[in-house]
Amino acid sequence: GESVGLHLPTLSVQEGDNSIINCAYSNSASDYFIWYKQESGKGPQFIIDIRSNMDKRQGQRVTVLLNKTVKHLSLQIAATQPGDSAVYFCAEKSVTGFQKLVFGTGTRLLVSP
Amino acid sequence: ETGVTQSPTHLIKTRGQQVTLRCSSQSGHNTVSWYQQALGQGPQFIFQYYREEENGRGNFPPRFSGLQFPNYSSELNVNALELDDSALYLCASSIDGSGNTIYFGEGSWLTVV
Image 1: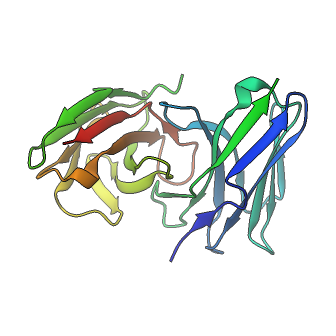
Image 2 (image 1 turned 30 degrees about the vertical axis):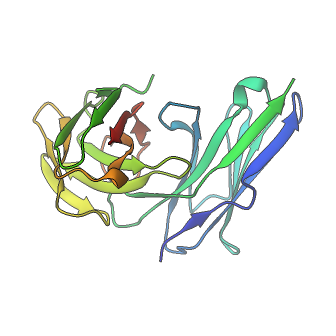
């Protein structure tokens, strides 16, 4: 069945380090991927997205890389800050045109001062 | 701010009861979807509404139903509540269902006792 999984359930980094959060997806027909940040007790917050016709997209301090050959997605956060501490989800969108996002179980990012 | 607001933020219901959760989307967002997020897991797609009609559904039983109103607000109704329905219920909206940025609200925490 459809699944989006993460390699590392918890990632601990020092403030100022660069963080890389990885994600594997299984549906090769998906054409849209999103990274969300979820802080405790809050809803998912959109970080950055990428379409399947791209392999890299940059935002403010964040970069998403997409490798369709191995069905792998990563989120790079530059100069990680304590405020980046949260659970990060990658989500895969079905090509059916619905809003159905398939989420993984998340990676918890812990940033130490 | 995502422009997606949900109410109530927290509620407790008894097994067998019915619950209605509400969502107000961003102006102009004609597609709304609902997700269930159990503790420690990623959100699971329940269904999507486009122009007041359900046009996509995940693996949830019929006792999960919804409505979307002309002003793009929406409701999630759950009948015959079960203990396993305890979760964070998230509303998401976008301009349409074809892949534009999908924004989430902060969610409604439902506890069934």
